[in-house]
Image (cartoon, rainbow, N blue to C red; front, side, top):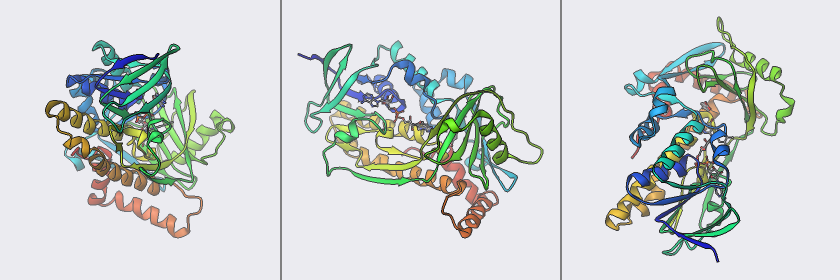
Length: 394
Ligand code: FAS
Ligand code: PHB
């Protein structure tokens, strides 16, 4: 006989979507339980996103989990585009009336959220197994899972599928309900964390004959860098020396040097654009990577996950306060308006900055013209800036 539990909102996944949702609901007096199949340590050590939009920073601050982010995060008011050996700064502060971004690793955000959940008696169960979701097309959705060998059954009013691209919630929706929109890119990113002081105050995106490269960072001592590679690349064939040599070549600019250092972590991430519609079915609501994936060029993945759960938390709050499902019924349509605009921006940044294997000479010159236009027209630069710092929430 499974151990029976009851809550208002059952949440699958303790990534940014699941933990932000859980704490937002707590702040509104709504109970939730989060089930996560990895350990807390694993989730908090995964090397992932690094850029927080202004809206994400403002939300985390308003939620009371922004203290460390405020002291340790690096606030930036621009990025640099580098091509044909020349550098061009996109001035967010000037173009967006003072908005910026904050560099603060996803892992740090999750540590802050987990600490807040523990401090407020939040129920986040790590290292659960065999999670499944049932009866979400009815009034008593259930999440079944095993914890420490015990079978558990969590009955709730709603289920939030915050379990990422490889989770179980999206696939549990019956065939014929969902439509998938997919674009695979013919390249991936090789990313490194290095014990090397960042060689630039701000991020540098480069378009180079040998391929895209990106200089980012995590702290004043730790650099985060990426270079475009074959999606099937074998990371073991990339020695530290080879990685640094390629980054030196692609990031080169007159009078500028790239500081090297010991590589602490390296890995290859594939690139795809993915959206599933609708993002809800009955009382199951998909949020974050379980519903959409963007290529990381626009630094949007985490921020879009947070935007989804802001919409969901607002809809659930309305329901529990008034009994009205009106915002819940519009959840998917509301999220998808932002999702598709962010998909467009992420696709545009990716298409502008990467070399495509089968591109024609025309494509190459068009890309250079796009970069020339974005760095010479205020109107064009504004479109990049307003998307990069984050579009306003509806
Ligand atoms: P997440 O995938 O973060 O969280 C889902 C959680 O659900 C995970 O903890 C997972 O363990 C758990 N889960 C999965 N299946 C489960 C099950 N059956 N039962 C219980 N729990 C389950 N975005 C950027 O903006 N910039 C970047 O540089 C960047 N780099 C990335 C690198 C990699 C390798 C990956 C995979 C993603 C990267 N992203 C980046 C995107 C990433 O940050 C996501 O957008 C963000 O984590 C989305 O958050 P969630 O939707 O919460 O999904
Ligand atoms: C990062 O710092 O991890 C990062 C920054 C900008 C991007 C993608 C990733 O576009």
